[in-house]
Length: 158
Image (tube, rainbow, N blue to C red):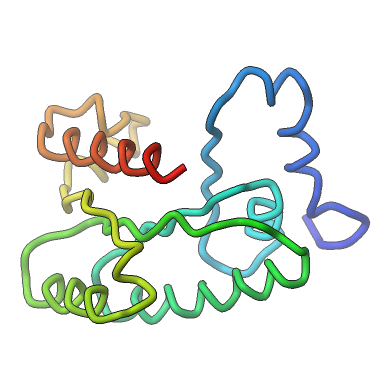
C-alpha cells in the first residue's frame, strides 16, 4: 500500500464504523517500528501507542529514533496520540539487561514511561507462537503473570 489519496486514513475509517466502534473497547494494532504507511495508518487510527523493546543497545537507540518519527507524524497529521510507555520484552538477567534498565532509569523522558511488567525471554514462547499459541495458553506462569501485569498497567494509563 502506497501513500497518497487518503490511504493513510483507511484504517481509522474502518475502525470508526459503527459495528466496530460499538463492539470493542480496545483494539490493538501491531506494526513494525519503521516509518511506513502501516505505521502512519496505525498512528492516525490510535489514541495511544506502546513501545515493546528488547533490552539491548541497538533497540534503545531505536526507541529514540522512533520517538522522533512519531513526533514528526504527530505534527504532520495533527495527531493527539500519546505514548503509554515502554515494555521490555525478551528479557534475561545479564549485563546488557542491567545496562538497559540503567539507560531507562537515567532518561528523563523514558523513566516515567517504563512499565513494571516485562516479558521474559523464553524459547517456548517463540516456538509456540509459530504454532499460533498465545502466551496466556502456555505453561509459563511467570510470563502469564507479567502479561497480566502489563495489561493492568495499560488499562490504568488509559
